[in-house]
Image 1 (cartoon, rainbow, N blue to C red):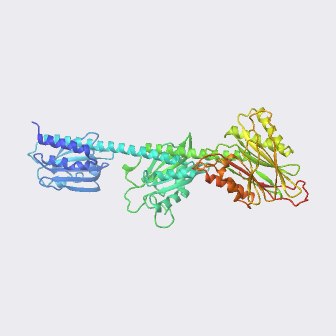
Image 2: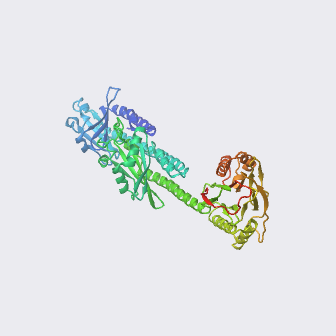
Image 3: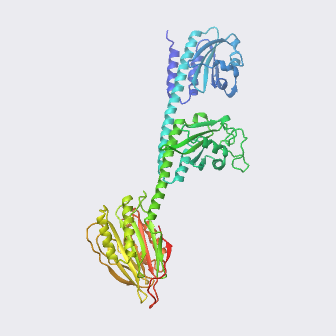
Length: 613
């Protein structure tokens, strides 16, 4: 005959199990129906960690509404023999035969003389086991009781398995979200040190209580960044990362290991993370602050070390410090994924840094290292790289002393960026420099450069302007300007007025046999000639206006300043002005200081000053 009462109770138990977030939430739905079984006078359950550590015991006696609950960490050595295998085991034992050294339930069961203890032991997970038992008298149908215990245990095991599975899925979802956020955060910076700091900050406290990041150098691990949930312990962690020989030796040994390793307990003996208290005070302030040794902490310290490997080479390591329950430790797979993403972000930043240095070095070789100076003119230049991807730009400038005592100023802009533009930049600057040093006039120099570009079948065009400053006996200078499609130079007069030099001419490298006409005008003492590329004038604000529209006013405001201040100020103003546009900005500024009337106009002794790059 079907026991409707127990069937209904079992149905309710399954429903409760499907909603439970902890197995302990099933207690009322398990204990009460079992206690209502004829002949049952006591229900008692236990939870064990490892074979013999009793963590929890709950007992409910017939006629009582209040269970007796004991939470402990008591060692019961003889209980180890009770540890079940993979399948639940139901046992009948006379209460009189129970040994207290292995059965903590015995004291409760002895209150009913002649009782029998029917108990089912079962495994919940790899960390321990559990039991559910009832004390019955002679009136009980023991076989029926055993059946009910087995059914209740089935529900408990299924509930625990479901909780673990849901927890894993939730953890997996949280881990995936954290990894996605970590990738976004780390990939948003191409600065090496900032990327490394972000790696540490992202992981704490979501992954661990503390984190250390090291780069692998030829001389060994180099500390870069550390963070900890506690500020006081962060200072200690930074000290450990920089100077601790135990950690340095460990990281050096593990530099080629791919798997994440966890260390705890005796493995940390002699380390600054040891729980024995024997390690020296890491922050040196005598307060005992030690990562993983917080006051009133009940959890042993664990550390993990993951190798940072990208593109087949080791670039460093990340060390996590944990002071939390074992169930909250991340998996090796998660740490490996996080380390892989961190390594790629760090490697990208390192590659960007190398590329930046290479591009800047190449850019320097395409520009003059020094500018000539005499007491007749004040020269300066400014160069601002505008491309965030750091391709070599095509802007160039130079200042060339000439045999007749004049000086030639040249500035140009090759279409596009990259290696091809760089090659054309070098050809253009050195061709013009050589011709102008030999005394070739500006128009002829540009025509011969155009012919060379056509002969080389250059695939890019360029613009350029050449201006010569020739001292005159009356203390002025003759400014001769010739342009090949380049923005017109400006002249800032000593009285503060600004005028544009009239120029014209076809782009270089477009047609064969092109001639260029020159424009002449006089400039007086303290007049300043400003040559620039279109990166200056085409800097655009958010409203759409170009810097070109306000350039004369901004230049006029710089009256009285030397060439270096004018060049740097205009560059920075244009850079601050633009909300769009990424072109390089090059400026060459020459302030004519003048010569006394009737002075010797032969070439003056030259000195060299470092050019801006």
